[in-house]
Structure formats: structure tokens, C-alpha cells
Amino acid sequence: MPVGRFPRAVAWTLLLAAMLLPAAGCGGKKKARKGGLTVKEQLTRAEKETNPDRSAAAYLKVARSQLAAGDKTGAKDSARKALDKLSGEGDAGLFAQRLIDVAACCVELGDKRLARDALKRAVDLTTRVEDPVRKTKVLADAGGFSGDKLKGLGDTAAAGEMLAAAVSAAESVEPRFQAEPLAAVALGYARAGLADAASKMVVRLEQAAKAIEEPRAKAEALAAAANVRAQGGRADEAEELLKAAAVAARSVERSESRAYALLAVASASAAAGDTKAAIALLKEADKAADKVSEGDAKKTIVERVRAMQSTLEKKK
Image (tube, rainbow, N blue to C red):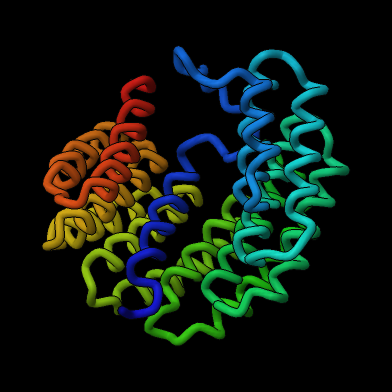
């Protein structure tokens, strides 16, 4: 299987969706379902989890519940426990990405000192990430978060350094597989508010996207380019890229891949402000997802498509 094709292609969709959906911090106003675990039960489950990354994720989930309940002190304690869980041995790429989630949670809790600590640890861990695409993604996410003035640290100087490192990592990828890491860097620059750098990177991304032959990867790359163009105020160029992305997405033969490709284009359309087009694409994605035969795969894509559709319907 070519590098970056399938599980990485899922990451493309999540990358685009992240520009539309709330960040993975700890302040989501998600209500517990009836019969769900209490905070105490969630804490017990987090404590018993032996896998450090899953335990950290569980503690962040507890922090969300505590913050939603107005227990900011408890939420801070859970965020610190999540950070502690990621200080030992483990998958450097997974730990680094989770540390960025911890940093986002800490910012939402008003603890920027702890957020900087978590982010520094994430960046330091990238020296142990061998896969250059994965390394690029972590550094780009870290840079975007660092420069984000609304939901991040608002430190454009640090963001520039992290994103420059992300560019270096992306350039080490074989040219025919560079579209994905370039998309991550372009979105990172855009989130950090570094518009000129984002614009230069998206030119490179467009060139890489147009050279891709596989339709799903092409659709996702074009959608990422459109997303950055839209954020830079280049609506006409974004619209043309989205049209080309939709054509590529609809040409994907495999149902699951077509659903993910359409979801990526829908995410970019929504981020560009075209909610109507996004919802129409999501309806197509839902039809494709419904044809997926494998149970778990079908459940995953159906949930993602319908979650985004619900979010957009509420904005209408």
C-alpha cells in the first residue's frame, strides 16, 4: 500500500474537519448521555487504564465533564494527570499529538504555563518520530496551536520556528507523497495567522495536489488547498479548487473511500462558508457510507458524516 494512502488519508479528513469543529481541548459542551458514567466512574476508568495514551485521553474526557459541570479545579487536576501519563515511554508520535490536546485543554482552563510545558514536550518528542509525514503533522499542529490567538498561545514567533521545522520535515518526504504534509503545514500557518507563509505553502500544495493520480488523495489535497485559500480571502480560487475536489471525490470507486473524500470536500466547503454545498456533499457522503459492508468501518464513517451534518444544520 502506498505511503499515506489509507490510514493517513483518514487523517486528512480529520485535519480539515478540525478547521470547522471545536478543537480537541477540554471545553466541549457535550452533555453526558442518559445512563452515562459519572465523573467519579470516569476517573476510576482513567486510573485503571494501563495504556498511557488511552489513559491520558480518558483524563482529558474527565476534564471536559468537570469543566462542563463547573468544576474548574477538578478539570485542572485531570489535565495535569493527563500530562503526567505522557511522560514515560511510549509511541512518540501518539504522545506528541495527545500532548497538543493537553495543551489546548490547559489554555481553555486558563493555565498557559502548563500549556507551554505540554507543547514543549510535544515538540521535543518529534525528534523520536521517524516517519516524516507524521513528524510534519505534529510540528504543523504544534505551530498552528502556538500561534492561534483565540484558542492557542498567541505566540507567532514560536509558531514560526515550529512551522519552519515542519517545512523541513515535509521536504524530506518523497515528492509524490508531499501533498499531505504540505497541507498540514499550510493549515498550520493559516491557523497561526501567518498569512503570507500560508499562501506560499498552498501554491506548493496545489502543484502537488494536481500531480496526484489517485482520486481520493487528489480530492483531499485539493480540499486542503481550497481551505487555506478561503482562509486567506481568496474565495474565487477556493471555489475552483473545491469544484475540482468534488469531481475527484465523486470519481472514487470504493464506497468507504468515496465517503471520506466527500467528507473532506464538505469540511473544506463549510470552512469556506458554503454551508449549503457542504450539506449537499455530506448527503452524498452519507449514501456512500451506507454502502460500506464492514461493520466497524461503516459505523465510524457514518458517525463522522452525520456529526458534521448535525453541526452544520444547527448553523443554518
